[in-house]
Length: 370
Image (cartoon, rainbow, N blue to C red; front, side, top):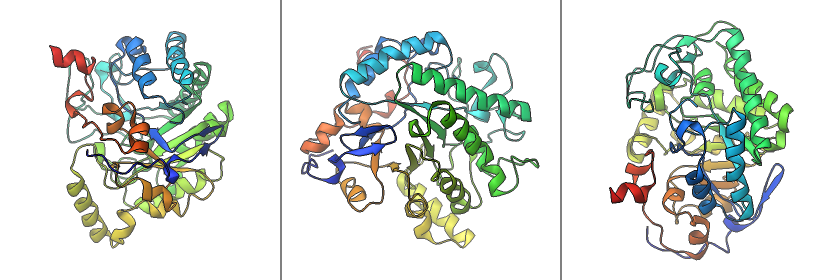
């Protein structure tokens, strides 16, 4: 991307307090699926990867690093130490992929979901044998739900022991907690299904349990209200996600992270926008409300709001200047530009990203040499 006027003098490069930490700028690296950790244990490549991207500020998949064993905790400590040495901060994103998992990655066990069913399109991409068809997931029992909440707490505690500054709960992109919110997936008739409040129950219980264990000011959470990935399609986007964010806004969290409507993990930006327009028309909802995060900015009044999706050098500063969001989260451009904050500040050209390397198991340089 061509160089532009530097953004160092804009609000994007002013301090931002997120719970227990204060960033020196508002350019934040997104949680990304990087499958470069054999046996789910971060290695020296992971240490160097995050060290390169640190600046003053900013297990269900094979190869994805986990954080549920002492060995993983010790390995992550090397990563967080490297980030802290450069004056950076680091949160760990905790996820449970639910029905998106495959038995071959679960020791033969059946995936879990709010209700029985399977993803009807696409393939389970991350398995030991490559892409495989999705399988039928088993409806979670109340004991399964209680165990899952305990698992989040256990992992969060290990993260703090490993030196992370906090954790982000992954409630986006069609993974387990997002599956509970979506009424086209969650068909339960107990206290975790049916009403908007019931479908939000697990998200709130996980958040409260983790906050009680490590402190609410060390907890963030991520949502993709406008997403369709992995079969998600909530019938009342603003009502469902607005409710859960409003509830979380009173809990003293470090931040709430919302993915932009235009962002899609598979479709182009134009196709995603058109699909949202079609949804708005079919449901009698204002297009404006489904093409902007503004409705959620209106309910998130006490918690820093971060946003991610489709940002570059030209469209980022106004979002922060106008107060539409408090911080900007980059993913793809951080992969190809480890020094992204400096480039944005000075108006330097951004290196294009290479999608073919996003989910590869090795280093990009090694792959190009082969």
